[in-house]
Structures are given as structure tokens and as C-alpha cells.
Amino acid sequence: MLKQLRDRGLLYSVGIVINRIVPEWLFRARIARIDRVRRNDTYQRKLDNLCTYRASTPEELRCASELAVMPLDRVTSTTTARIATIADEPLGVLWQATESFAEPELGIVYRLEPSQAWLFAANVTKSARGRGVYGELLDQTLSDPDHDYFVALNPTNRRTMKAHRQVSESMAGRYFAIRCMRIAFCVTTGSVRRSRTLSWSCHTEPIELSFR
Image (tube, rainbow, N blue to C red):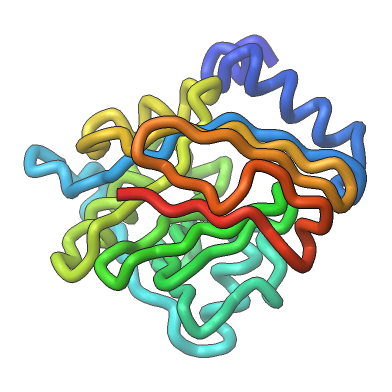
């Protein structure tokens, strides 16, 4: 327990407890910074027998969805996933989206430019954490030169901030979003732009975010 508090951070751990107590349909809130990330030229692989591949078949997409604890109905034609395995055992996953990506629990939608890609729903199994699995997923994903990659980081999550320290190139800005039932509120800083500050019906009219 104490190790988890040190790794995650107290504020982030408190947020997890609140989310477990308060149902998602009622309330959600998040503070995040949007970072542009790039491949780390000094990255060194830790596991020689670690393989990654892009999910393409329905079975592989189902596996990626289960690894990320993400509903399969959120998989669209503009989302893809990269899975990490050792001896065919799935150990981690990293999803990415183009064009747009919705976060209905917050009542917001990221609108992406053609050159942009959004990273989300990363997860590594407990037994594989700290062994370089996520670093390999990031390195393989960011090696694609066709996109500028962005990710939302929770500044209170120490583990997440540490994992992205070597790949974060610049910060586009921050946002604070809060949703209570159908009402969503969002404020932004930096180059993060919002279509509106308040939506009275975020399920049908979500707040749109864009950035450079």
C-alpha cells in the first residue's frame, strides 16, 4: 500500500478512491496536461525477447481491449492498438487514435489535425511492470514518422510522469474538466483550445478540444 502511494502520489490515489465510490454516470473530474511526445533517441531495450505488434484481427482487438480494461464498443475505424508479448503472453497495450477521440466520462472530444495522433488507454499487467514493457510500446509507436503524437498526463500521477519524462518534447497546455450527469465544464491553458466552456448536454454536444 505504501509503495503504491509513493509510486502513484497521494492526490492521484485519492482520486482513484473517489472514482470507485462515486458512480461514473453521476460525476467525473480530471486535471491534465497535454504533451507532445517524441521517440527517445537514447532508449535501450530491457527485454530482448519482448515483441510488439499492431492489433488487426477481431481477436487481437478484443485482447487489446481487455488489456486496457476498455469497452470494445469504443474501438472505431480511427483507433489502433499495439500489443507487447513475451512467448505469446500479452503483457501490455498502447492505443492510439486519429481524427478524433471522445472521453464521454468527461463530456469532451479531442479534435485532431491530419498530422496528429492521440495516445491513450496504456496498460501493463502487474507482473510485467517495471520491466520496460511500456517503454518498448512507446518506442515502437513513436517510430512512425507520419504523425505528431500527443498524450494527456495527470500531473498528480508520479508513475505516469516518470514514464514519459524521456519522451515529452513540449507541453501544449493544460485542461480541467468536470462532468456532473449531463452537464460538463472545461477550462484550458496554453495552446489547448476549447469549443465552449460549458455544455448543458455533453452527451449530444460535448466540449471539443484542439491543440498544437
